[in-house]
Image (tube, rainbow, N blue to C red; front, top):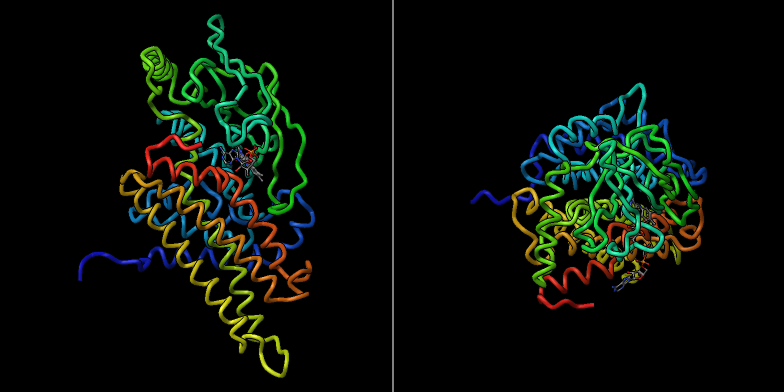
Length: 409
Ligand SMILES: Cc1cc2nc3c(=O)[nH]c(=O)nc-3n(C[C@H](O)[C@H](O)[C@H](O)COP(=O)(O)OP(=O)(O)OC[C@H]3O[C@@H](n4cnc5c(N)ncnc54)[C@H](O)[C@@H]3O)c2cc1C
């Protein structure tokens, strides 16, 4: 026998069971209430902080798990508990990854702990890239960052939209245009510290699903931030821009990694794992229901028409998890996504969650269609996975371009 294994090790199993306990005992019973309230479930984030489940330490530990499975395992269990509450707990992580992907060690040390606060005073953070006219088309971004030589400050102006925790966050990570001539290569990420004048919350959205998670516009009007709030620092930015300008002048494609894209690449398998969690929750509920519900004098699972649906649901969930684990393992092992494996995992898992949760409603019949039973909520929640962090169409575009080398549109 070689070293290959898909078994979780003892440490991973005990962490998974601990998260599962929180998901089952604290999140599940509160899920319907927070979905109806459409408010950030602060008391549950606080509970999570008290036991160390909402903390930089915990996520850092999972992030640096040498097998790569720490984050997907965590996401799957939390989103099995409830997607809206789970996103309220892990939304800060997207902003943290934005800093980890682009920041200096000093910036990481200063800002990431502040994003979480502590158990006595929990905080959340927001990652603001999308704009009203720049969703899939990140290159259409208009928010500008201009350096004020006189004060050494950056001045941000623009409107961000769809920001998870936008406006209620202490720390906002904002992607903005520093050189409009360079397209996405002219973007950079900035920290907007707590209480900075000029940053305000715009519209808060009333959503189809994940309603416990706060999603809002963030308006930036002459927001002045210190020079050292540019992630990666000015020298690195100037070097990167000079390289991009050289390539542009010689007719090249620009080169180098874009700030927002670096964040999304790293987080796609994690979104896939969230989808696996929601899909598994709906499948488990449907399996139990089908075993207990009787029609025609026998449990409905006695019919192949129902049992085969469950067989397909479980097969697709397991396949989705394997794609997520492969991408997560590759990312941790430093293997490049030469076939867009991160996008593949997100695409397949998110489409699976939508399909499986719809099948769960069908298996529960009329009950499945009501808010008395959780599969209806899970189906609404699952619709987000094919939209955020790159829609399914954009994932297919990334995969197809990577495989073919053709700039498919
Ligand atoms: C609940 C929620 C939370 C979010 N959280 C955040 C966050 O924290 N931070 C953040 O920055 N953003 C966030 N987003 C934004 C999210 O990433 C965008 O909604 C997403 O990228 C899609 O952009 P869009 O909504 O503008 O859709 P559009 O880009 O307008 O797309 C509309 C449709 O056109 C399709 N389409 C577009 N271009 C192409 C193409 N070239 N080929 C084929 N089809 C195409 C899309 O796939 C989609 O079906 C969030 C969104 C939601 C709904």
